[in-house]
Image: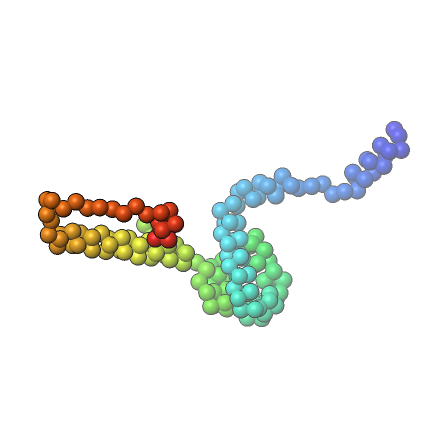
Length: 160
């Protein structure tokens, strides 16, 4: 055996074996709660930023060590309901909502989009109603012919 081969074998024996397969299997098996845990952790981090708190401040508020808070915000913690309740109380937020069948959570953006669509629909219907009444109240004469002026593209663009 050459010196190079001996060095490679020595290096390989010194390095610990990788357990990447076990980590992948764990992530696959626990995908659902890991996803929820990550979302909770991100929400907690967002609120810490809003309040201008660090992990130490949250640890003091919860009565735990900074290391425990660090584990919580990594997004790989299987949260207990008691832990979630403590976080909600300390941060003044709601992290979990129980929804009945057919209920769903809407973001502020979704609500604003629906409001804007409703306002747009209302204005469209109002304009159509006004046009209807204007036409209804006109005295029509079979001899009258409507003439439409042609507009330039610039005027059309300004009108829109």
